[in-house]
Image (cartoon, rainbow, N blue to C red):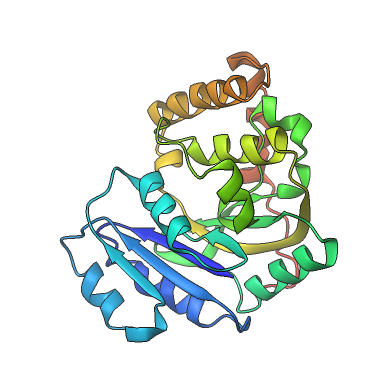
Length: 254
């Protein structure tokens, strides 16, 4: 299977990301890193890992989703997942567990939970993202499984396409609507938090980003044949607030 990390000026965090991938127990990982032409030490750090990185692309791009599409096109694994350059896997069996769940269920996709963590202390959990609540019927309300845990068979991307460049923030949501609703791809759920995501990403940067995100969610649904509205999408916020207040203990982890 293939893991794609896209990055741009990520020298402060990308070493942690790479190490978490290289420490995985699953034996058949093709690790692809797509860099947008960094001007800090990112390129030097990646090159320092030599042939432990299966493919390294470094060139200007049109943003994060363009870079992800480059990674998808370069991938040869039977399934593909994305790991951001400031995220890490919660344990070294994360990929093995995702793949085993997909194979046991004979599903097209699989997803799990994740935790948001303090950028400077990745052991300090600030929010628990519970993907068990997801069902395609909840897409019109803005619910989606945790994207960094989403493992997709490569043939689905080949048939239905990658990330749309017409979205600033919600191309991952639109892709999930397209695959899990429009294409009716099957999915399985792994009840573990397999990724630790540092807070401060583009989708968690305050009211302005939230406004763009939720309007794009409405557009993503409508463009794929799902009727919704901004008030309906905003109905998810009370439950999202509870993710900050009530943080379930990570299953099988400290």
